[in-house]
Each structure stands twice: as C-alpha cells, then as structure tokens.
Length: 337
Image 1: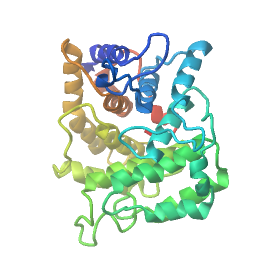
Image 2: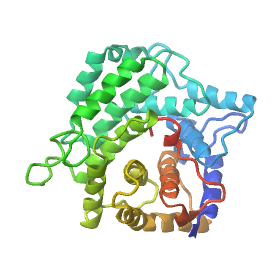
Image 3: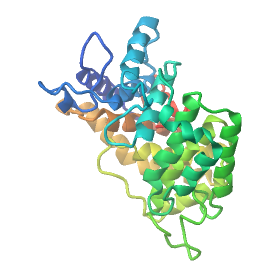
C-alpha cells in the first residue's frame, strides 16, 4: 500500500496557491493567471477546486461559506444565453462542468440555458448524437454527446421522457462487438481499427457510462466492454501519459470499474490485474509529488483529473493506496467530468 497522504497535503497547498482572494472562493486554473496585471480567473479554476475538495471530503458545510462558492461559480454564467464559457473546451463541456460543480452545493444555474433550448426537442437531441464523429473523433465528440445530457438534466431543463429517449438511443447504438459506442465505428469486421485508436473509443465511451450510472441504467454489453479493455491492456497497446496530471486514468479505470460493478465475477482477476498494472506508475508518480517540496503544480484542471482518477482507483482496489479518509468519487454523485 502506497501512502499518498503527503501528496494530498500538497494538493491542498496547491489549491491555496491558486486562490485569488482570501475573502472569496475564486480560483485561477493556472498559476500564471495570478501574476500581476493578469488577474484572470476561468470557470474551470473554481469548478476544479470545488470538485477536488469534494473528492477529499473537505467541501465546506457552513451555509455562508457555501454561498461564497456558489457566487464564485455563478458569476461565470452569461445571463442572456446561459453559457458558462471556459478556456480549452467547447461551451457544452464548460457549461456541464460548471453545472456539475454547482450540483455539489445542491444548486442549479442562476439563468436558463437558453442557448440549448432547441435540444429540449427530442428529435434535435437525437440529431446531435447522430451527427457526432463517432469513428474519427470519439473522445473529443463525447464531450458534446455526454455533456448535453449533463447540461439538460443538471439544469432541470428536461423530463424523464427526454432521458428515456436519450438512453434508448445509446442502447440501440452500443457496439455488441466491443461494448463501446458507437456500433460499427470502433472496429472493422476483421478486427482492425475502423478509425481512431481503440483507447480513444474507450475514453469516449467513458463519458456515456457516467450518464448511465447516474440513472442506474445497465451497460448494454458490459462483458464485451471488459473484454475490449483487457484486450488492449494484455496486448501492451495501452499507452499512458508520462505526466500523472491527466484525466486519462479516471477515464480508463472508471470504465473498468463500471464493467466490474455490473459483472463482478467476470474475468475478475484479470480486471484487477489490469487496474493494478496500469496504475502502478501513476501512483508512484503521485507519491513522488508528495515528497518533492520544490514541486509546483500549475494546472488545477489537470490536478482535478489526477485526484478523481485516484478516487476511482481506490474504489476498484482499496488496498493500493492510503489516503487517510477514503476519497469520494464525484461520479458516484452526479454525471460529468
């Protein structure tokens, strides 16, 4: 078991270092935004800080303090359109990310999401799903297809019928060969890649899995999905980033975890070995971060990905890490990340 309590202490120090004003709950995503003359904060900075504190089980409970957080998040919403604009992603992603942070305080957006009104129509929603590039860009496009669901549901803009139509489309379009989305877009009949690398399809499917989990919807081909993940891992084809500050680990392990939850006996030992083997270097790197007093962590969004990844690893195999209080996986509470 690796003791990651020093790393988590470094996480809290990093949050403090990215805070604009001691009297407010406004955070810069990147440390450079705190430099003199810049003073620019992005919605991702404050949203990331809230998600990180929730994961550490340290989100404030006092109403006055929570009100400061809510104000800091809601100030980023455009009153005329309802968009939460953020740097580095499309508007659906930044809006869903902000709404998912507000949900941690049990509140919704201050203004209606007028710019998404057309997608209240089920045909328009289905048209968006159909139009995504599932073959060539499944990872990036999933931020739209999954993010739209989070925007509409977390803002209270749609009813159960709308959700049912959304989930029925996902069920019809799941790929029985790989267990991923979308049918016919992952592999050719001979097993070769039909478009993007296999991991891109896994990471894209991850974004739909947390929507299914939110409403306790079953994964259409859960065992096939696990087979696909194990195929990639056992072949040596799983390429992981050098930096531990990434969302890749939460994408990868959460996908395995969802399959393991639905099919707890299916290839269990292999699944656990895949989680353990694929995350060993990540855990070691986080431990090194905790021991390196000179290390400066610049990007709160990348840090958020690492902390959320650690939370799902702990859920899958609690014996791997020591964190003091167990981490809380934010995707067990609401969709989107």
